[in-house]
Length: 426
Image 1 (cartoon, rainbow, N blue to C red):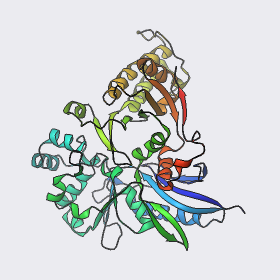
Image 2 (image 1 turned 180 degrees about the vertical axis):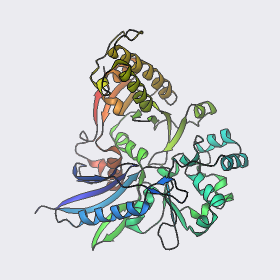
Image 3 (image 1 turned 135 degrees about the vertical axis):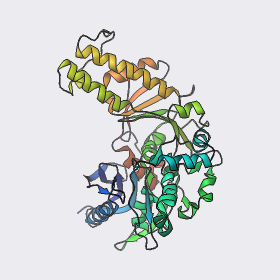
């Protein structure tokens, strides 16, 4: 039997938990996925069942790594962000994996920002809009002030990607792609943790920072392999584009949220940009990625359902609507009304993307749901006549990014074309 050297990657989303095996040319040889039942935290709020997730990761990896047809040499992960796993002295979780949608107490939020310079100034420094529990560092502040027993017994608070990595390495570290994910922890101007982290005694819980593409030699089941330290999924999904592109670009990642990411814009966020829901991520190289967010996919789905009910058509009818150059503003038909809706959405998207665009950007890559919407893409291309707009397709981008980060062999790829498919929109 032919044995293939492979890269194992866990790609942990809020809903779907995926596992992949890539060969050394980054073709997917195996994939599986599952959905896990949610648990409740100690307040009765829904949360990820960290014990069930851990069990699935261990069982999945042990099963695949024991198969004779695969020689697992590398393992890495990408996961959703804004989530911390709190470990006790025994290295096991000592608290629930609190959901980033958990309501954050208003009075505690007010106390925090009054102590540390006010919402506007603090948000500019940390490149983090005020998002409550979605600012994961705030959960450490919450534990200290509202759950002191948990805070006292926690030895480490690991970002979720680094917790998954620790299951293989038994080592604890932090990574810049997670720290830079609107955590309220990082001072983007000082390029260090914000002063509140030390003042509140939170720094003792934060593991040492390692390079995002760092690897650790490990021995599992008698075999030598190399483990990455894990990546935040949005930053991981950028990696295939950064490797492929030879010129500056903006990536418009579309879904429920449409996020315009500019890895080549490191100018500090302004008050006005923050007010318009801009933020900064950090790339796997530790560089700021100025980004803007828009709840466009959600708006599209809500409005589309309204139009479908009004015109008596199925909710998926919009997928068959053709582009109309000059739709009737009175929207006498569903086709006319849908074209008019998409025009309105594109206007809003252009306004959001322009917040991070720069004159030297000549390429916009659009991936996700809207990249398959011909009306949206045609109108977007018309709005950017001096920029090349592409419908982009990367198969499992965040998982592929994690594989690329850990393998360190992509710089000698004979053919990268299969990593990223681009279709220019005329």
